[in-house]
Amino acid sequence: MNDRLLKTLKGITNGHARASQADLLAYSYDGTPGFQAMPDAVVSPGSAEEVSEIVRFCRSEGIPIVPRGSGTNLSAGTTPTAGGVVLLFNRMNQILEIDEENLTVTVQPGVITKDLIDAVEMRGLFYPPDPSSMKISTIGGNISENSGGLRGLKYGVTKDYVLGLEAVMPDGSVIKTGGKLAKDVAGYDLTKLLTGAEGTLGVITEATLKLIPMPSSKKTMLAQFAAMDQAAEAVSAIIANRIIPATLEFMDRATIRAVEDFAKVGLPLEAEAILLIEQDGAEAAVNDEMQLMKEICEKQGAFSVELAKTAEEANNLMTARRSALSALARLKPTTILEDATVPRSKVAEMVEAITKIAVKHQVTICTFGHAGDGNLHPTCITDARITEEMHRVEAAFEEIFKEAIRLGGTITGEHGVGEMKAPYLEWKLGASGINVMKLIKQSLDPDNIMNPNKIFGKSEKKRVVVGK
Image (cartoon, rainbow, N blue to C red; front, side, top):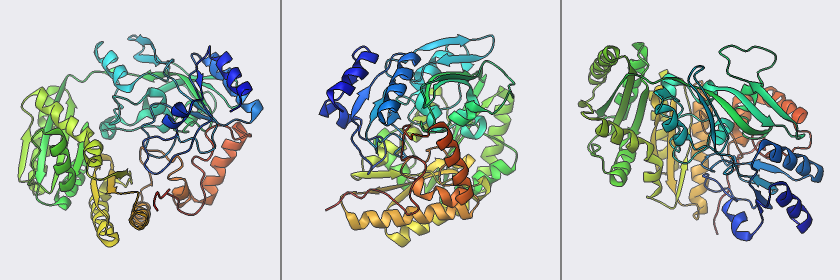
């Protein structure tokens, strides 16, 4: 990044471009262990017009662009592997409109997810997507990664709430897709194409999101099991009984102990597995379904099933689940959280497979996640400085991904592909599927400046190993 280039970027953004070593280092990595690369500059645009100018300039100079939210993603989706400019959206962080008549909210990409949720709830409205990182993650990042969350089973993921986008394309042009519409089938669905594209097809500068009415009642329940397979079978049985809880979360014993030591909310240390169950809706229906789920859990072997007695107790249970990654990260220097996902009916089989794979490769894997939608988070606590151990970790996750696909699942349910899972994507999509995606990328971004080296990786496995 020479003085001429930096001066131009500063001119476009009224001085909001930096290239000090401290700034570059701070944005050389994200939430993914083992991946790091230095950018050449960090730029904070203040409007779509500034983003457009930056993109046009970078394209003319052949400079890569990496759009970045808060960097909480777990797929190395915002590591600047080809250098270039990291785009930050801390200056574009406004909730522009809450439209109660059309049940929509329009926001800039830098809005923090929890701030949006709180703002609409003050109006009696509900934005369901709730990634565990919602206190720090941004809406732009959520859209780019198509983030999920604890409420995904009943309410879906981010893409289900994106009605329209404003985006700057790789040639610098600004497009608007969708809008405040319940129906819109005019042409290709560009809104869905950009959602989950991980910044490889354009830069999101504004989003119109769907809201729904706030549920009138909510209850939370904790079910304890003496065996992991009992909890997994209970999940399958709940779904088979045509009940769709708002939240149906699973934790194994190692995760329970780590979370309780971290959050101290009174989780049962004697349980081998627990289910955290939440249902919302009309009060009578919630009561009926919670009772039925209690009976199902007991039938599947739960030795304790208790309803949270207060809103504070319920909130503590959900907070404990959201803190699972932070709790496990305290145990060893490196924590690798994955999200192998299978059909709901295969949860028990997948949990058993993860346990066997961990034993086979002599690695420590704790499992938790969104069991209700089959999105499990096998999490390895390890030390990236021990090269031999990291190779065993890599081999274990390779087997886990293969097993997920064998069971009809996928390599990622909500984390995205990024750089980390790119080598495994062909296992899921096949060569023809990869080729179709590459044609879309090449058509829209022929110069490959938009977040290069993401999604399409080499055919062999690849995880950076930091060791001697």
